Length: 417
Image (cartoon, rainbow, N blue to C red):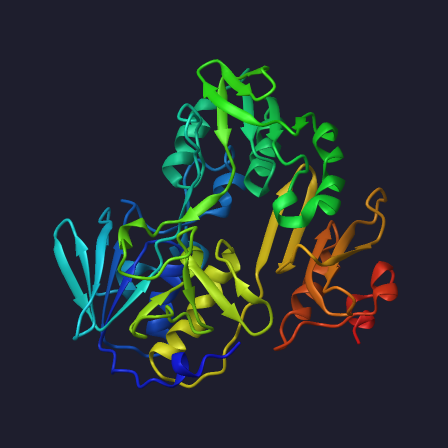
């Protein structure tokens, strides 16, 4: 997976860094710069007009936290203290690579620096014809949705992914009438595949949520959701929870982008195809990993830990690559879930434990015909969470004995080869 040209080119001395973004990846980048002794100028541009905050609580704690979970409290990094200048409510409008470094256009004029870190995150998807639906990705979105979910509300959630299931959970717990529509047929199907995703379907009815599988939405109106089969699902509030896309439109053609808008980067978050003074981290990055191949953004743990590799290389410290494994955690429908690694569509699934039992269960995805594990999933198995994380710390994929791994009485460590 190495690219000699992307790692051996000489790198100019960095005296100033412009971080574009105001979320977790941006905040951790600034904190990492200062922790490593960088005393040059650091400027931060954040599109949102409020201080950096953590996004997972927006869904997990929508109804029991009325204010954001500030990153200065959550991870101990306060941007106004760490950076020389922080411009909140100041979105970037364009980027130009110059002979001297980089320049970012803003409403207040251009800003130049020796290096730029693109950490502008993602935005929620809302297809045409769904304009009446709400989305949940920002603190402002959470405020609107929270205000709308008053007692007696009929909520329809489009999408049974991570966010959709979490919102359905908190809304049902508050006594609301909740229906979830899933076009693909299986909850968490995109993340877990149909075989494993289908095993989570019974959870919905168990907590009083109506799940409609194979429900293809045509339009969202003021009175509900119109489906392709001609039926109307009545609703007072509709939430579109069908994914997010990298927020990179502001870059125009300045950097090479993937079809979804992501930026392909190497192991140290240098954007491929342009000078190494341009970096990308967090939701915008499609990262090359020796262990997993190409790792898409959208992982909280990647935004937290990715800046370590980025800053070490940007400052030329020579540290080895950390290569954090993708990690998703979720509390939904009465269960605690964790997913590590990158699942491939041709992987072979091995269930760990009994999905109908009381001791929790999980799933492992093996590369076809091998003992190599590409991803691990746990449900209500706290002891397996740490073990699953440790599986993905070496340079290569872990190897497990398939028979031993099926038995929850055998630790994942003891199942390793």
